[in-house]
Length: 597
Image 1 (tube, rainbow, N blue to C red):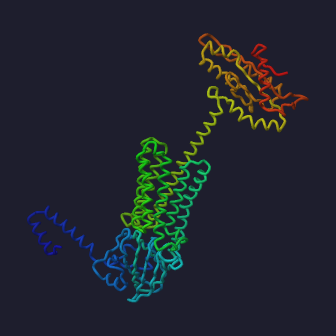
Image 2: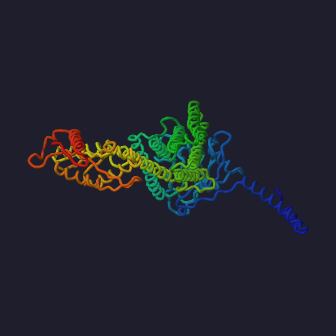
């Protein structure tokens, strides 16, 4: 590195010779060298003054180094902290990667008051395997606290989801030395706060997690129940996707491990975390395939998703069999990264194929990806500050995504119901006349007939046949015949009263059920229908076409025979009687109403 006197001399020479460009280049080089050298120098960590400091992360107050030559004793670590090879935290959270050497950290708590102050220190990464903390005051160790997820839950310094302990700091300075060892990601957000603030933060965090998990669990259970009824796999996969994410979140935030702890080994939490991570990723990718039907328009992408969700979990299982946590962990992070990218890719393909819901799907995917990135960068201590909000960004993003995806499923369900109603309507409706067809007539009259029989009410049937309809088709063509059918159907529908059920019975025949109507009343109503048909004015190329209809009526008899034997019969028997009456009307000259005597 140039000496100041050398640098001053060169500046004076450059100024006198006016070689400013060369001077600027050299100054830039010198500045770069200085930064490089300074980054390796020891930087004294500033102390944390309490009670002024009430809560916060200690990354920027921390010196640290990696343990590279075997496990060190506390005395050796204290000696190492006097060397020039220390690093100084530049962000709230110190993050050093996966499966790295153990780390020693140091910071100082300065109690500027004369009273003893009770504070809580926590390392808010629940998968850290071993953590040792030594508190040193006036050169003497006053306390040694051990913990981590490798220890039984009841043996930890606090019954808490993170490594944490509370300590009454005496007046003056207390040096805190920590040794951290883990096979998982070495993310070290060290949180320090007064006990009162820590309790307040725990309560607030509980409400936040409760709201987020409540939303996702409610959506998951609703869609799983829906899947049980309608058997559409996207609803079941969506429910599994949300359940998987909630379980994964409960695991990597340490909440699940307040119940499931060390029973299956020191690295049980690490294994559970990564397998829960891929569980929701696999379910989510298959849900997207089912929802967007990618196989139809993006077969290559669909096959890639299938292979990704098959080969990576199989590779992780191989790593589990051979107890290679690092290998399986890398695969899990690869799958999680693919999950985010493939979600967006499938949304883009769906948009290109002009599939419904593609825009909302892309919006939900991008939102979740941004929030996942924010949380990842915050824990890694890169670009984004680590705090409660950035750490929980992934849950917020996933909850927002869950709501948007639920809206897609709800809209899809609504469209399916509408399609079903339309299909049912057309299955029961004659497409030409828009009256009920024979099937629709039977469906609508079944329940009505039972009510009539049980209540012993009057009921009648009118069977209507268009006169000389074959001649209309033969003379004027089937197009005119269809128009005649539509006009007659409209006349019948307009003549019906509330409660009457009309239908096209077949060909040029129509039928009307007349509830609460005796046979005499039915004759009057049938005459009304006949007159309406006869008054139809229809012009053709060959002149005006006159339409008439014959009608047969059957029903209960008013007066002392009001409750006739029809109540012991069936609707089919009543229709048969009306058909006989219609035959009589045809035989007697048409364009009239007849009954069976």
